[in-house]
Length: 499
Image 1 (tube, one colour):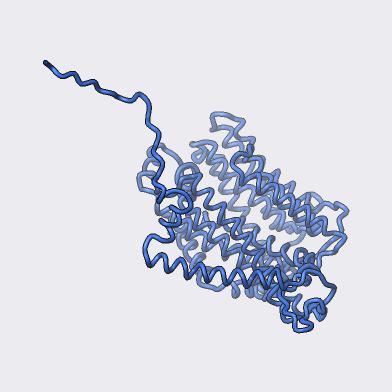
Image 2 (cartoon, rainbow, N blue to C red):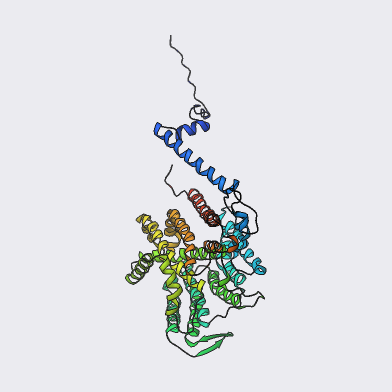
């Protein structure tokens, strides 16, 4: 008699069994992470007691024994042997100065508008679910800077012809880079070659304008020197030639219309800066507090990233001249302390300018900080470029992509994704280094707080510690936000190697 055995195969996956009680919940997590071994248990107990002691003393100093209201220093002085902790009344009394510096009280609404617009655009760009990233990026990088500059200063700048020529030179260079991406054969067209030659003439004329004096001419209601007028007209001509080259070589002639955006932005930037909007002029020497800290940090961060990318690409270039210039630039700025760069930008930069040409002190600092941060950013990005497998470059070459198409569409997206931690680390370091501008006379957040220590109205033993804790908390808040967003982007882009 043959034995019958029936088999059973489940048609649906079985639910996972719950973990053992000793490994689940808070007890299981603590047992695994805090008390896994006797040494871990002792270390956890010691560090817990130390943390409890620190937090308890901070609570006593910052809350229990703290003074929250008061009109002057007498509120924060010890009376009848009572122990006095933090003097938050000092922070409360000078809070507006910590935020705005000496900015006129009646005009501080302009700063609030700039902060508000900046926060809205930044959040909209940072949140992945918000649509229209290209439009938002254009608003943030092209529209917001002139609007913020006009609101903060009052506008109605007296721009020289050389400055206007510089705006259109940058616009023409951007248009030429865009043209390369619009058509794979545009580089071989005679009009594109002519555009590059004309742009080179514009750059030479612009540089010669700083070294050679020439008579002045009036053009478009602005005063140009002859050389700056040549640079301006040559930049416009180069833009027109690049548009014509794209129209003749691209699959869609409408692609050439996008090249008109850079010169239109340059023209709008010029008109906005020179137009009178009825706002009172506020010189930058009245700016201070968090306003100066954010201006220096944001400008340095936004400017250092693209400059750092170009320097990193230049250092890996096969053209000896480009590679040499990039290496010299990077090694020079990395070998000089930031405080030295600030002193050089503040005192030595005017010595290299032509007679009659002066830079605002804040503008000098912005230039110095941007170039300094760009050198460090270049090395971070170069590390990402070296991490890209050689096959990616060969694959791009096999697709007959141009150099800039290869970098823009294949290499740089991967390289930047790999070095997100390094980029954000550089941003955080730059944000904290803004406190050094106090040494050359600019009152940033930390500098404004330190100036408050000398106010006779609030001189007490606890005033310095309270002010420094407040400033440190503000710096930590911004740096921690950047760090958290960096981790979020890493997880979203899956840059790690965890399975």
